[in-house]
Amino acid sequence: MKDLANTYRALLRWNKVEEIVEKLKQKAEFQYKKILNNDMVHKLSRPPFTYIAYSYLLLGSVHKHNGDYEKAIQYIQMYADLDWVKDKDEDTLTWKENFEKWAKMNVLVTKLSAGDPSVLADYVAYIESNKEEVLLSLINIIEFANRYHFNIDDILQRFEVSSLITNPKYSNRLYSQQMIEELQARFNYELAHYYLNKGQNGVGFWHLIKSLEKSVSINEKHCIIKCIGLFESFREISDSGTKLAYKKFISEVYTNEKKIGSTPVG
Image (tube, rainbow, N blue to C red):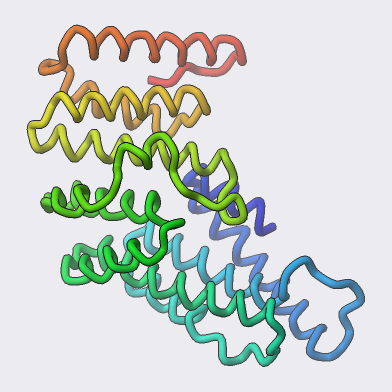
């Protein structure tokens, strides 16, 4: 159920995420009570409390996506405070530290999503001390900048953006290769949006084509649609080389969709 919820999360199907996670939370709480009563027969692959805490994390993400930031913060606080977990073994302590760290980060992300620029400095400091989260964290910052028309040039200059595009330092323990490539596509899209809005058309279209290229290669339809929308908004100021590259990748989309017999994107 956890993996299924993550799959729907990657597909941005938040209604399905909420539906599955509510069931996950109920099952996890039931199993945890059995463990406390010494009724658990088999050993789980990770401490049982993590499934409860992770259900809170995903529900927080659902409410953040839906714009209910107050509710999202409430769920974040529920996995930030894990004093009810009494085990002291090394694995449990490691997971508790992870959830506490994620809670601090997600409070900042949620406040950013709500349009609060006062947390930006703290969030940048978090990124600098958590290198495995750089790509996702910068996506959050650029989304904030695009939504609220905020200048983040100084922040982008502090990180090696070009290396994040080609070789992000992400642990396979936390992220699958598919997830990393999806993040790369999103990263380039958000950068394209940011630079095109600022009138920096050359670099903006470069990132848009990179996003479209990555999205087509992994068949990330949600990002493909966003790239099409962004390109069409700025088509009149694109040069012939950009138009040619765009046409090439859109042709690949139609070819791929024709092969599997589904309706083409766009």
